[in-house]
Image (cartoon, rainbow, N blue to C red):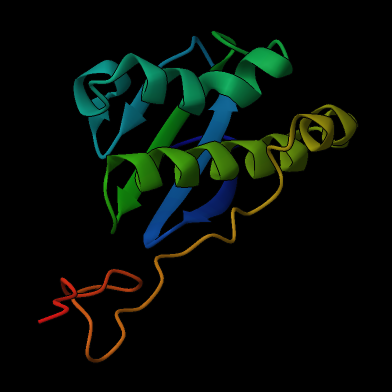
Length: 130
């Protein structure tokens, strides 16, 4: 990316997103593909755009994101955090708005590990009385 841009990293579950934000026309690419092409579900598209809607910056910035690891939901959450952090770097006055919306908080929830003697983290094998 040429010109002035702001970079931030976002994480959620096992996904990591590198986000580059610069003033522009509203072009949004994820892994060199357009956002609707990469994120097929409308709910995930809405999640990714939430910080932009809250700060009224939708259509005013060009965003380029590179996401890896995890699934689409985790990657969408990581991109959201990356966008919010990059917006704060670009304009410190947006921080209270993004903080109030909860966009600057890293989601700490992770998958619980599988325990020995069980089929999953909490599930137990079927109990047989006799």
